[in-house]
Length: 106
Image (tube, rainbow, N blue to C red; front, side):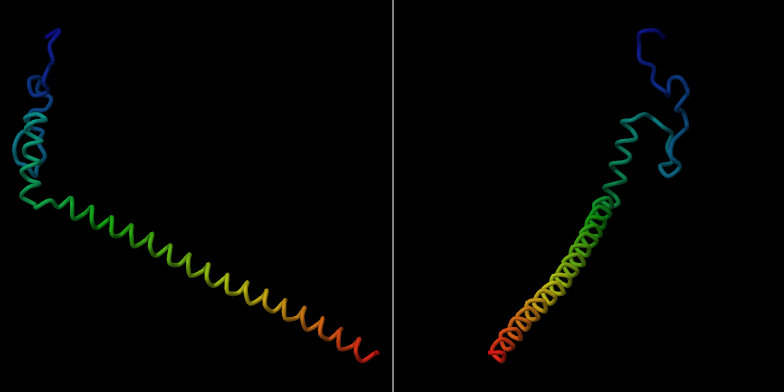
């Protein structure tokens, strides 16, 4: 058969190689597609539920990571603010002690 397309079932390559769950012999892509779409409508779009499940899972993971990151950012910002306030208070205390010392010396 030169010049013409050879179908697998004509050559015997795909004869009888159907998925066991369908229970019918392989009849080509169109038959598979029709069978698959019928099976999918019987299930009630189970693929959509799985997709939603994974989308919600990924949203929860990303949201949790953002919450943890935000919490750590707030904590470290608070600690840095406390350190800078302490440094400013110490600087002011040293300046006040020096001014009092100069007043006493005079």
